[in-house]
Length: 560
Ligand SMILES: Cc1cc2nc3c(=O)[nH]c(=O)nc-3n(C[C@H](O)[C@H](O)[C@H](O)COP(=O)(O)OP(=O)(O)OC[C@H]3O[C@@H](n4cnc5c(N)ncnc54)[C@H](O)[C@@H]3O)c2cc1C
Image 1 (cartoon, rainbow, N blue to C red):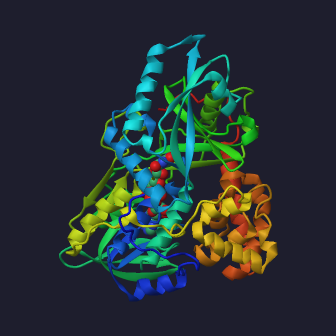
Image 2: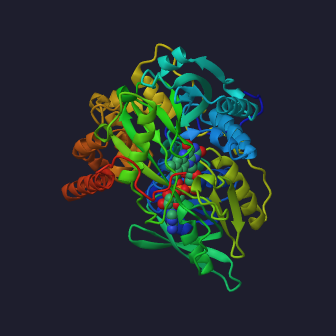
């Protein structure tokens, strides 16, 4: 790591001040240089960049932090091997550069993950041209920055089968190994938001921007934010619209008409028990039906598989996995492994919407660029759209450069060397660490000590939050005290990822978890019951949408 000085950030022996009531009061009383709308990874990054450059910064999120796309990704911090196919060399290079920066700024949150790319035979024959192309792509990925973790390797069939014994041996010729990174997307987003708060940003979830306030020249002087059933007038000179797939809706509030600049693309994932796939590393599995590929990725004791990439014109608020989406992933996986996995093996599902820019006239959303764009309106509303989880810091830098210009201020971006909460002083757990110590270290970094203190004070908090999953009851307490979790879904879907890892087990534990956090959140019996009902209802909708998986993708469904 370079010896250049890092922007100082709190050594997190005591958790940072992250209190919603105080934040709502300050939204009404303070005056801000910039109000960031949207608490996904993009808005979080913008708030951190702005606050660390000394701007008086506020961030409002309509629902929970990362409740939009930023908790529903493939959870890879990567350059994106497949973008090489589309000749998006710069995108890959930038992704791999950002991968390195995130690894340095948040080493506890980002884990290196080897990926196996099988070289397959079709009809018993090896397509040498395809194998050569794959080799070239591996070298290009390394040259673009992949080498920073480790250079790719070619391994033989036996070695590949040791990593994934379920791969169909009759089709396997050999394989490549390359290296990328994985991070819990919701946790990364929350860590960026909390770091922004540590730098002075005023941050609130469950606070929605509903209108802009402008002077007679049409310039923004403030915005109305609704929270707790009340309207708060927030005074600000600039607004950043970082609302992902909702960006057009917020632009409509500013510009008076819906610009339809975005083309949302749905992607889904399914979670399976690890022993059904038996992979000890990740894999990129080619899909013969449409020349795409899917990821097969280990996560805790489970494996998730994704993703699809389809045009989407349904409601933006709660996209669901359809039976056809699930059939596509199962068919693609079962084409490569044996024995096959069944729909009844699925433990969890999630669906997300990519905020892609509409401009390319491509029939396939997978061909649309993952580049981002920053647009400055005459009203001083700056909209940032597109991009990837991996490149959030760079997107934020470009956005705040524009905000600084509008605010008439000059200060360079500081986030390249800026530890996220939990990173300053973090040391990777040693070989003798217990599974629990490792689990806490990778989720909280130096703040793991605070969770451990909770357990010391009340040993019952060391029990599992959801039987079969690694989360402790102490983590739910930490989530409501220090991470602004407000609902049962916040705790089970985003502060922990129990809902994604094992939907039914999380539903069964819902009552016990609600009882645990109720005193912290001031819930009476009626509210506790309402929270459990709402959570189980959401699971039922998810289960119903994904049920009745057909044998294959539906006619007319386009994947690509
Ligand atoms: C299936 C899938 C897989 C992906 N995999 C990867 C990957 O592996 N690696 C990678 O780098 N990228 C990946 N991406 C891309 C990445 O997830 C997204 O680019 C990123 O999460 C978008 O973040 P965002 O903050 O722009 O949007 P969002 O996370 O959607 O955040 C926008 C927020 O704005 C809030 N909001 C909306 N309106 C208002 C309002 N009026 N007031 C207040 N708040 C409001 C919403 O509630 C929401 O939380 C993937 C995307 C998908 C869909």
